[in-house]
Length: 276
Ligand SMILES: [Zn+2]
Ligand SMILES: [Zn+2]
Image (cartoon, rainbow, N blue to C red; front, side, top):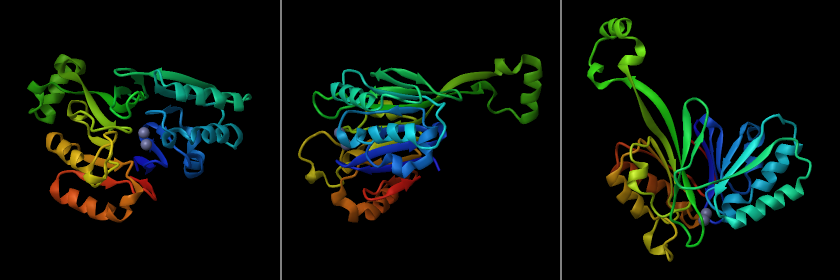
C-alpha cells in the first residue's frame, strides 16, 4: 500500500503517501479516516486555499493535540506563498489551540522550492494553473540514486567485483535523480516536461465528460488522454472526480486500461476511500 486517498471534487480531498508519511491536502474527514496514522505525519503540503482541500486541518491539529498518541513529533505545514486565505485560517487554528503539545510550523512555498525528506528523497514544488488570482502548487517526490556508469552496465557480476576492487566503488558509479511521484493538486493539465519520467502520476480529473466543463480551472479526461500520449508513467491515479460520475468510474477505468496497455490505472471513487 502506497496511498490512501479520499477525494470528491468540491467536498473533500486528501492524499496520504505512506512511504514518506506525507499528507497532500487536508480536506474534511481526514482525522476520522486515518485515525492513529495522523501521529506519523510530520509534513502536510497544501496545494491551494479552496475549502475542500483545507477544511480538515483544524480537526487534524486538534485531534493530534488531544488524543492518545506520540506528542514528540512536530508538524510542519507548507502552503503556497501569498495565499492570504490559508494564512488567516492558520492564524485562526493557532488561536483556537493555544496550548499545543507539539511544535507547529508554517512554511510558505513557491515554484522551484525544494524540501528535503528522509532516505535521500526530496520534494519539489511546481506551480499549477487553477483559479485566476489563486496561488496553487503541485508536488513532486524525487530520490537521489546511484547506478553503474553507462560504460560498465553490460559487465558481468564478477567483472564488476573486479572493477570495484581495482577502482573503488565510488568511481564506477554515477549519481542520478529518480522522479517517483507527481501530484497535480487542482489544476489544468500539468506540463509533460514536469511529469516526464515520473513513475507515478496522481492527477486531478474533475470532468470525465468534456462537455460538463464550464470554466477552464480543472482537467478533463480528454486532456489526461492527450497527456498520456506524450508521457508514460507506470501508474496513473486520477482523483478529484466530480460525484456526478459515480456510475462511470468502472467503465472509464476499463477504457483507459485498454487504450493505454502499459499503464496501471486507478480512479479514486468520489464516494470511497481508496487504498492503492
Ligand atoms: Zn478542489
Ligand atoms: Zn480548487
